[in-house]
Image 1 (tube, rainbow, N blue to C red):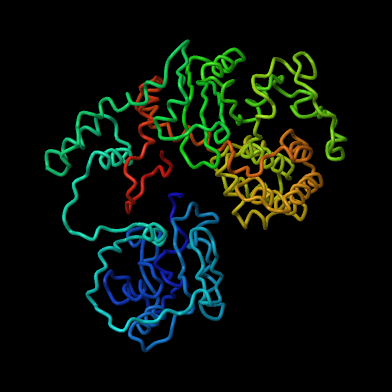
Image 2 (spheres, rainbow, N blue to C red):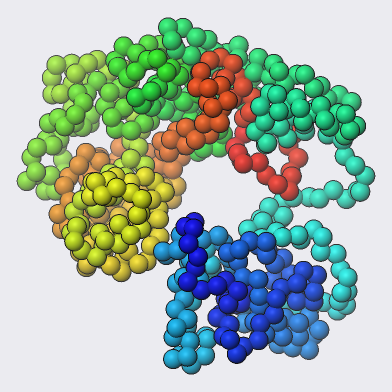
Length: 561
C-alpha cells in the first residue's frame, strides 16, 4: 500500500456498520473483553479482528453499541444486517481504500450520514442484510461478563474458514513434537539446514522434543531425493522420473501432468506441473550455462526421457513456436495449426477458416527446424493470451483520452513506453479489471470492448467455463474490431481455433510455471544460484508433508506432497 496517509482517518468510521461518525455524534473505543466485544461475537459469529492494525477502525458508533448491547440483554432490537462490514488491508489509495473514497465533505449537505456513498470494494465489503438464509440470532439466556475470549485474540474474520476445520487440543498438558511434526515445522518456517539444526538443538536442550527426534539429520536431508538427479554437460536433470514419483508416494500418470519449459537470458529450465494445480511444481532440468537454442532444448528433452512419457507441453508462445520448429520473429505463417497470413490485415476479422497445416516440414511455410514435440501435445497458454488481449486493447486507446490517463495514474511507477505498448503483468491486469473508475472513464466503444474482455477472462480463460463461451469470444472479437485493434496471433487462436483449447484452461494454465520462479527464489539465494543435485533434493524435501494434523496457523505454501 502507498505510504501516504488516507484522506479521512479510519477512526472516524464505525467498525460495525462503516458509517461516518460526525464530530457531534457519540463514538466509543473498542475494548477487548467488554460487553460490546462479547455481543459482537455472539451476534455475528466472529470476533472483532484487526484491532492491532492501523488501517482498521478502532471505534464504534453509539447506535451500533446500544443496539448490540440491548440485543445481548434481550431488551433491544436486532441489527439491520446479518454480516457486518468486513475490513481488509487496502492495496492502494486510488480505488481500493474505503477511507479515501468516501466524500465526507457532503456530510452537512445530505440528510444524515446514511445518505453518504459508502463503496463496496475488496478492502471493505458492505454489510449483508438479514434474509431467510441469514435469520436474526437469538440472544443467550445467561451472559457471563468474564466469559473466555482468549481464543479470539486479534483474529480477523478471514480466519473463520480456518477455525471451522481446526480442532483445538482439549488438554492443557504440554505436547512434545515427534520427528515428523518437527520436520513439518521446519518446512513451514523455511529454515536452512543450519537453522533447522539450531532450532531442534535448542528444543532438545529444553526437553521440548520427543525422544525419537534427531538433530543432525538435517545436514543430509537432501540426500533422500538427490539420488534421482544428475549433472551432465552443464545440465542438472532428473534421471529417474518414475522413481522420484514413487519416493513422493505418487503414481506417475503422464496424462495428469504437463511439462513447462521456460528460458531467459540467464537460464533454461523445465518444470513438471500437475493438472488442476493440486500439487506443487517439480523441477526436472535446469542450466545456467546453456541458453535457448535448438540443440540445448533437444538435449534437455532427451535427458528427461520426453519420448517415453509424452507429456503435454505448455509455455509462452515464443517457446511453443521454438519447440515446434517455427521460425522466430514477425513471420508470415506464424500459426502451427493453419496457414494464417499475418500480413493480410484486410482478411483478419472477416476470414475465420484458413487452410490447415498438413505437416510441419522444415524449409517450407516458415518451418525452420524439425519439431521437437507433437503439435497435438501443445497447450495454448491462457495467461499469455490474456496479456496479449490487454496489449491490443491498450494500444488501440486514445493516448490523450480519459481511459488511458486513468491507467497512467493507476501505475505511476510504470514507464510511459510500457503503458503505451500495453506491457502489463497478471496482477496489474487484475487491478484494472476491478477498477470501476477506469470503466467510467471509457467511451462507449471502449467500454463495450472492455466488458467483453472481462467476460472472456472470467468465463473462458479461467477455471470457470461459461456455457455460452463461444458467444462471449465472438462478442470480444467484434468489439475489438470496432475499437480498431490489430489481429495478433493470440487473438487469431480465439477467432479461428477455439475448439483447440482444452475444457478447463485453469487446470492447464502456464501461470503455475511462472509462479515457480517465486517459489524457488529462496532456495536459489540459499545455494547462491548454483543449481545442482543437492539443491534439487533440498527443494523436493521442502515440498513434503509427513504429519497430516491440522494446525491453527497454516504454512505459506499450501500445496505439498
